[in-house]
Image (cartoon, rainbow, N blue to C red; front, side, top):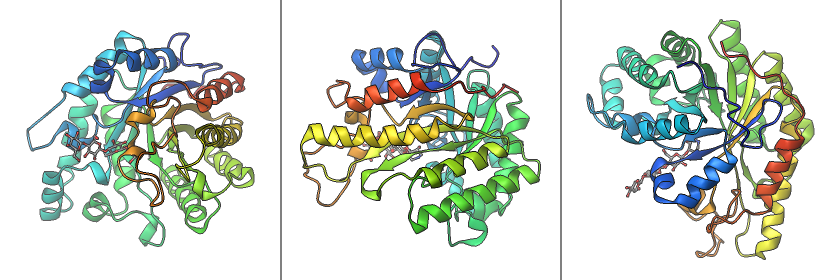
Length: 349
Ligand code: G3I
């Protein structure tokens, strides 16, 4: 089977080559028919929220648990949806046994090579875009590279090396580096944008097989307004490097969960509108993925979002509320995708 047409059939409010997608968990889709209906109504692309991470796929050496990822890919294929592969290398989802091995024998690339070979061999035909390295950057550290288990074991070249390894096993997929914290005007995020751009420039200059970037876009109402004068040039500079841009993990952390629900929902919708106005103006933005569909399943519910938040308050930062009723932000996203101007699709390699 060739690369999946990421536009999918006529769903997902995808127009002019841009897709709308969501992070999902196959256990939730199978358990909740209404969630499955929402996925099929809204999404042209699915990202496994958890099931394609290394600790999920290979919890022990020689121990593979591919059931959930297989199920998700089968569901996507059955319904003609694209799949974003998330994620091959991420410090936080590295199994303990891999960490131990790399601490014992830093420099042993065979672990990564074997893992990529197996995973890309199994899913490569059905996954058209991979987050090869997730969250590599940091600021105020050497090379602006986060001190991950991979940075420590392999040195600063590990990102380029991972891209080459991925290309060897996935010749036709788009290969992406995915990161967060680029959205606001504060010293940390201003530095993160600069660090990310430097990493991309370096990877391109060295001929690494990088096709695009993932901009996570975990928005936060507590971090102030979004500024076009900062975000638009950030997107342009990525585009000028010849890279595609996927918005990969869109959601909104609320500032105060105690207020009037209608007002909170309006603020979330307005914030997303402001973000998509800027992002979708950039022709190289290929699509938008929300990090879940329903507030009930959002990772933002796992811990108190703000110390002041009422314990009963659900963060309302995704398209559907906890009862799967669409909220204003749902319609904002739908309309923004419909309004988006034509984007030249990144051609599949
Ligand atoms: O399913 C087990 C459950 O059996 C167990 O009782 C419970 C105890 O902690 O853990 C449950 O698994 C958790 C899983 O979410 C499902 O809730 C894992 O511990 C927890 O680590 C996992 O968190 C996920 C996290 O990535 C780590 O994989 C989040 O759902 C997921 O939203 C989050 O996604 C990340 C992106 O991959 C990268 N960017 C940031 C984003 C948010 O952190």
